[in-house]
Image (tube, rainbow, N blue to C red; front, top):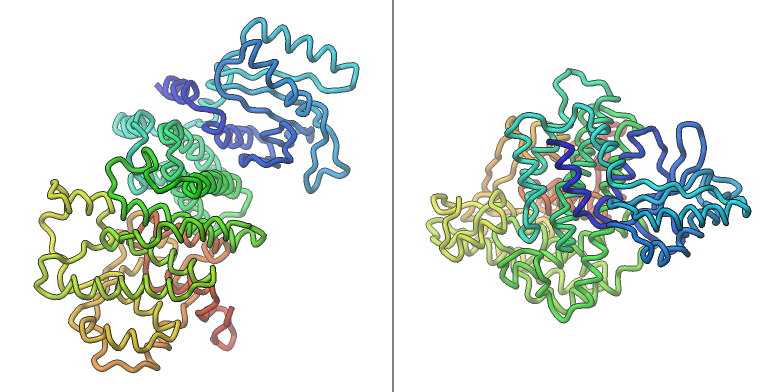
Length: 543
């Protein structure tokens, strides 16, 4: 069964669809990955570069589909670069050509093409080039199956879940919460405590599985869906590292492959959205109304901008983000409280682009709308963040949805986050105007059972906390409460990889808590103080 799933996935995957999985396969086989999976102009025909266990340097060129004579001739320049150019990478000093090179395809190589490749190798051997070795689909299938060992789902119910993902149409929202549960079952091993080597192998299996699961979205060029799949894996890896106190060697390869695969897809999403006249982008989310689509695309692109700004400070996405937001942000609409994180990220991005008025207007409008809509007794209260954007849209058109039997009036999960955001920026008059409506509501926030559970799809041991805003309220007290965050409120591994934070409330909207929002403001604008647990004076450090 597993071999058939792998073969089906490989047959339908394009070059990009199996590149990250191939890099993880190499890592599982003992390679140290130097370069993968994001394309750049300096790769010189080498999609993946790795060091084998014996210390030799290997380079791989990946192709999608069957390779006939015409296809081989069209890639002859790439093959020459693959075998003949030096690898330039930190630690490879001086730069040198690879010791072994491979042409990898998820299809087959025809007999005439194989014969031409043999002639190509014969001619280049006199130049001292290594022989180009071919790796085809059947070899890949057996290697992928072997890499999974015992870590993939084996029970019928779990195999059915995997099949549903692999055979999905790919034009609907990616099922992030469901997929997070699937991945965690693989990574959460029964042995207590689990061996780090077993977690590393389980994460490797989960990485390859993520390539299978995102395949339908990849084939539809649904960049948002593919990115969500890889981001889900990235947060599972972070959680595994935090809960098990793993050394980098046991989780970083899988995490980095997931992170960089998501970055590549979000960059494609941004490029596509900026180039378009509007956001009628086929198959991002089938049937999604325009305001919600605008919020989704602008919110994810804003998260990408904020993340890249923190992670790769030389990124040049500002002008393109501005072009997109200039055209689309006025059409955005938060579809339920699940959409608030999208608005929050766009508002923060506007500030960094030099237009704080637009950012403040977005948050003010949301705070005013939510406080008015969720008044006690309201029949039009906004659904809480545990209900997805899709659920809210179905409910809004009177379709059957889980929202039908629930009441949301009298409370709000994200209103205090909007108020904190305004307070940190000194918008006192705006907050004063909103306060009469606000004081008729209760604030609600989820308190995780442990910092690592901020990264979890579900936390049965956590609890909801409800409180009423002060009446009257002291501005000084509001500023004090809004302007500091305890280091211990978020997992250490998230502080260490803070550039991942903008994506967390997009994947899991109910994880948009006050500490998460404060940490976002600390990352983006250093508006918050972080109180560190190991500070001998127990004081605050301003970033």
